[in-house]
Image (cartoon, rainbow, N blue to C red; front, top):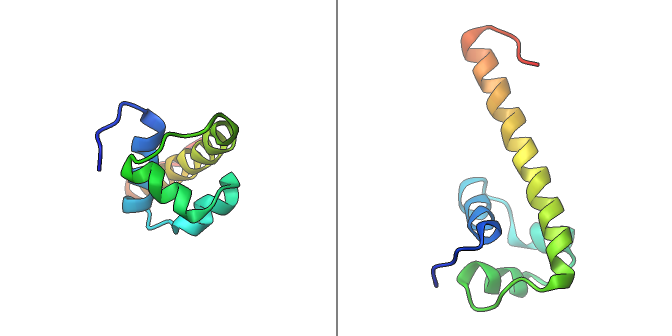
Length: 83
């Protein structure tokens, strides 16, 4: 796996590793093949300009879900409702 400075690929790797999201699900939502997602994660290929916008939208959606889950967990632990 090559090191990358592209923050989108770093977040994508974390999503696959941490959240146990299936690569096929990511591929379907972004509009590419599963093999393409594996190549991005492994650093073999770069994200194409056509796939860039759908990938950004997918990552934003995932980040929003993670943030909401984190807020629910904090609210549950502290007993203070979050906004």
